[in-house]
Image (cartoon, rainbow, N blue to C red; front, side, top):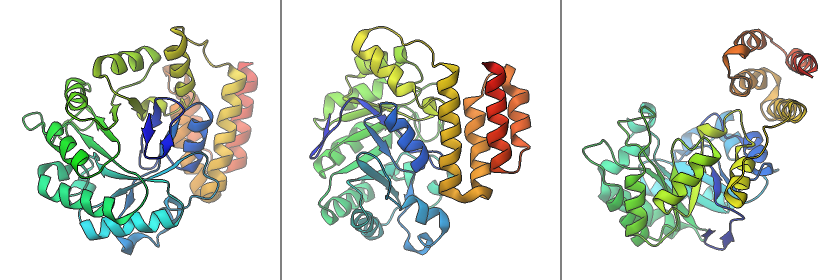
Length: 320
């Protein structure tokens, strides 16, 4: 798959997830075989750029691979300016968010709320594409609600405006993340436009990945929640797509190495106080089965990086 001048090494992309796909997580997924990792959503409102959260999201030093930065907003001029600022700071690709279903985003008429207003969608796309000389991509949902699936209309509009790749989550905004993703709309979108289409939603296994690719005809897959606590899913999927065989489950020692490295990167990125709290979330995903519930609960009570690190080392020593 190609996005502008960038030829991806495979068909696997890390979905942008606020509070999850920070630089530490993106680099880990890239190392395990993802061809591209899209950054966390960044507001186009410059008034919030001076916050610690925004500064971290706009930081690209140390980034591995192609840098794709997602921006969100509802004002064409602010979106164009945000795109320019991020390109100046090292973004290789600008991704526009029209897929986020969160209330705090939608009440500002941004994210998936924009799918209700094709005219404004057109203004935003034209403004951003015209403001930068790097590829601009777009992420959408299938529509606002099941009765108004206008994904094909928005997709055709995106192609006409110069968008170079379109990611589609197989749910409407009203569906949030409930129920199951549907792939018929993604398939129809792929049949109605010529730019690359990326299928997203409920891809959590190598078998599901192959099914979605085959069924939709999509050019690539975007994986979000399926990678939480399992960054090696990209390696598993790629192996299955290439060989038709499943990889053996990740070894305990490798899982230990990944988790401890991930924790250290979180401490480096956020500092100890916030890093410890982010670590609780990620460890909760790594250790997510019923037998590990008590382990998670004990880990969540720890208050320092040293305690967390030591606890996980002891936990894995006992497993081995």
